[in-house]
Length: 405
Image (cartoon, rainbow, N blue to C red; front, top):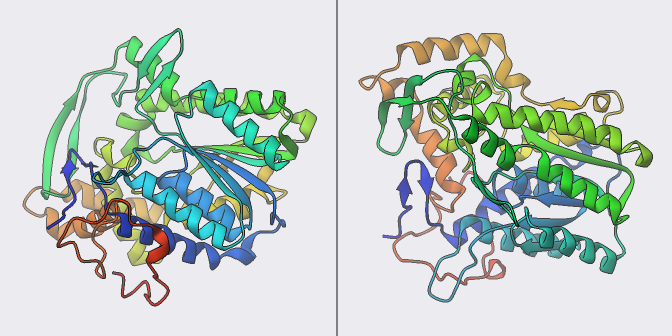
């Protein structure tokens, strides 16, 4: 059997065909929403920095198949080799490019470190070659480290700031609740996290593209963030991640001012808690997200990541009234007071004995594994797949979402 390898809520392998279908599934959803955009974006160009998975991948899919845009993507993933499986992110981009080109949309990608100067210069070169300018820049990097030439390497950390954090975290794959304790971050750890996950590199991208004259009139840019309710504040909002996100918000305000000459805007996109490769490693978040999503599905308010992205672009960024605010929020379903009270009740009661009764672990596991190409009912996982199998030989058109599990 070719199984997912999971360690500390991180999946270290992938299945090519499953990754291709994961992209195809989101494309189908995006095509359902094409009429939702109030502005004609067809033929305009978007740059997605951090396009291999999660919200960045969903953004590229939504902008192409929902809004009709051409795209450039920058990502940093291990490519497949003849005898070695690539990362899920690499396969995701192969699938996206294949389907986008079939739809007669430009889909150019660069597999290199987005923090580096070379990545920015490569994008500028491609834009000049294609005689294109960027109308939308999505900044969706979620890297654990950042290297700066001549300065050094910085590593982000997920820690509290004001004292030790004590709480519970969930291993959904072993169905275990574990007590955890995290010591407060040092100032050096706080500063390093801001350096990696704050707004500095986003600002460098915008400034460099503007200097090169490749930003279009009415240019818009958005970086993604999360606020969350009280449950997530100790380890997220009031921790090192919160400091980084605060810096990101401050950067948005500064960029918004600097783009006035182009009649441009800079925004922060605030999503609800989503199951992504990044969120799954944040302590306490898997338990919170599992309960949140099961309640939303029951209430009929749950949205896939690509649906959240498309709602942000169609009803916020390109809505004349809503877009006046630097913050664009699509986290309203999570913040619903009735839902949060139900969520509180479950989190207060849950323990190891009643965990599987109160919490939909299977739902979390399925959504997580499918991002790496696993747990699709129509795929046989008996044997190791061909690492270099191309998306073009896999036809999913006769599969319904229901059949795919």
